[in-house]
Amino acid sequence: MNTKRPLGALFLIAAAPAHAILITDTTDAAALASAITGSGITISNPQLNYDVTSPSGTFTGGGGIGFDSGIVLTTGSTSCVPGPNDQSSCSNEGAFSSLSFDFTSTTDQVFFNYVFASEEYNQFVNSSFNDLFQLNLNGTNIALLPGGAGVVSINNVNCLTNSTFYRNNNSGEANTPAECTNLGIDTQMDGLTTILTASANLLPGINHFEFFITDQGDTALDSAVFIKAGSFSGSSSVPEPASLALLGIGLAGLGVMRRGKTS
Image 1 (tube, helix red, strand yellow):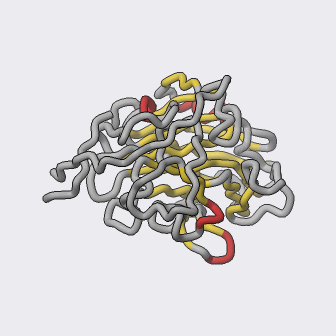
Image 2: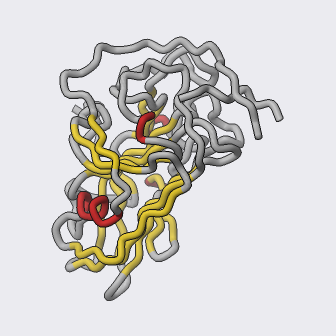
């Protein structure tokens, strides 16, 4: 197993917001699926699979994330989600979590809003520790950036690559250019995507969906995905939806340190 050591990163901690994120742990797949189900969608056969400490929960007070409530899936523990970002790293054993279900849509389409976040940012950008997030619709990953810009991952969305879709939440680390401002978002996660919207046309009848998030390279440094409450819907909540669209978060107007990477 790889060993991991602190890198001496200096974090700039913003004052805690008045309404900090509050997570209620649950492994009840039906409750998680129900929390994100919106208009025009009927979900059945929900299943939660995981090998981590505390894989999932519902949350409120997520204004810093970009939406007030929803669900979260992690590659380690939900304990690494609430802020402020006052640890040099947050990490738990385990590798993946997955929420899957069958569903039908009255519109033959599906839309939902989400945010990907990780403790791998920024020091492990462009490394083999490229935690993987997928939105699998009938076996096909629809988590793709607009304009053919590729997948939603640490190596493809960060301060240096596709930075329009990235929000930085740490300072003083490798791969963090000076102009990549620490936004002081209320989460332990060192970086987050902007709010993204996934959309797709569906097959007739019953379709199958899976939110899947997993560590890559080792089991250290947690990642998480947040899905907005009620947004898994048959109609879009944003104009002109693309495969992934930037909604903006004030811009327009998914422990113990164990990484030094020695074999």
